Image 1 (tube, rainbow, N blue to C red):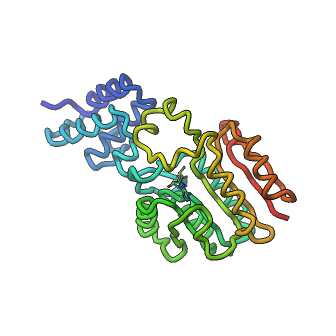
Image 2 (image 1 turned 135 degrees about the horizontal axis):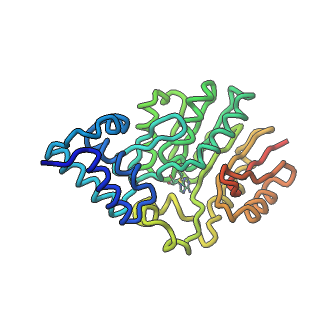
Length: 283
Ligand SMILES: C[S@@+](CC[C@H](N)C(=O)[O-])C[C@H]1O[C@@H](n2cnc3c(N)ncnc32)[C@H](O)[C@@H]1O
């Protein structure tokens, strides 16, 4: 007989722990919930239930992928971000919690400017563009990516969330495809230095798209080019809010000074206290 849910979860947690997964209990629960097509809360409420042989086989297959360190979000095909559920595939970065903070800051600014025009550069799954469009409900949003496959994922997410009328998806390099200046530029672009590839967790190094991660020798190529382009695309009184690596503050501030010598420029920490965002405010 197949084991009860409680015992199967305990065993799977051990397997994942040995494989180096950093949240083994949660991952085991989410994978089993996915295999059974139920909510995680259902599993926790039915610990005595036994799996059918088919369910056991499905769970075993998912567990093998996670043991090989494939990101959970690619296995389940989805990721929670802010207050939405996003489809994710290996064509896009799995959205990170820090990026929710960028969205929160953008929404605070947009509350005073409800009809603003927004751009999300390097949109990936559409995480930033779609949460902003959903909450700043009178804004118009452009979402740009250089990867057609990523834009396909973002478009599907927009359709599912009923946001296609307010978000325009543009294929191209940084701000180049933008048809008009905007009020706020948001971006979580690649910012990892090429040289640290081998230090990354297997989930990132072996599975996430390299074009979403790396940005030249110092990790600054994309941010430097974006900041050089940005003055031509920003309306008076506009804002820029960028995510960056926690050890890049000095260099990013220096780049910002070159492009925006008269603007207010500051580095903002994330909830863990690390330097994480560059904010520029035009006069
Ligand atoms: C770090 S991921 C961020 C994805 C998403 N914004 C998020 O926060 O989850 C960076 C994204 O930038 C895109 N990208 C890389 N180079 C680009 C470029 N030159 N122009 C536009 N997008 C680019 C990648 O395809 C990837 O989707």
